[in-house]
Length: 381
Image (tube, rainbow, N blue to C red; front, side, top):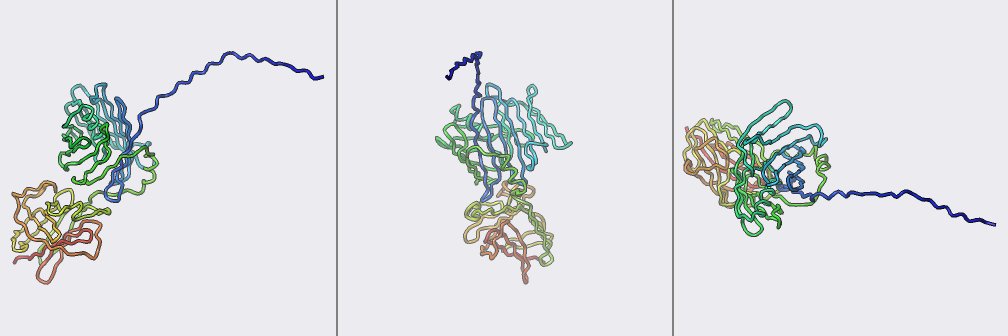
């Protein structure tokens, strides 16, 4: 006969409290390209009082940065910290650190790399934002503020270098703004309804970047992937030094890369004054008198600008020297001479200026892609 037993187990009441962490703000990314090359990938989150960003930079070398902006409850500037790391181990062993701290009615800047420490200070501005070349999330902070406040124009102070500079932000319609850099030109941005950067076009500036918005990314993993694949400098330094029929001629200029872009008629518009290179203005120095298509050029140093056209265009010889390539003063022109456009058998990746010697003359050649602009000259006795 089988017996059944009922076993009654009595447990103390067990109360479990689960505290759910409130999800943080969604991360957004901005990807900056120059032609076929990806130069910068940034991911950031924005919440009241704080913006945090991770930056993969590939120009001139690959690096990883973490940036944090803190704000007071009223949205005014409280502090900023940027730490840059080697790409092989992003997040460990800082290479350099930059901090901005409020000190009474001033903001104190400190930059440290190895044992080098630099400091500076300037007047406190509650609307100040940090600025890093080719990093765009601070622009989004400014455009979101502008949209939230219902403004059509903002003069935004940003720390560019050792002191603030004004970036002029202007409405260009219901979903677009222009952002004028103090000296590089004007960018244009299409905005999200909240004022975020949806698409950013800097092709009219000296940087010529395009920036597109995306979702979350693993920036550290991307940094490791591109650790040994830097994109290089946007524009290197070129130099040509040649003797042509006894004249010692030296040309120094910036060398932008093609990077798969359409050049003349594209990033270099037809019919507009071009800096003829990048960065510093192109400088031309000769120790003997020359003549370009009837224009006499006394021995000395000059700067060169051009107006490219499909049928050739003009070479501009200017007497001002030492200036940036964006600073062209036509009142200082020595003169203008025609250029001859000829096809090139080579496809030049880097913009290059050459000088060639011929039987009794010489020629200045501007070469990029499959185009050569040539200007003949003679060395005067």
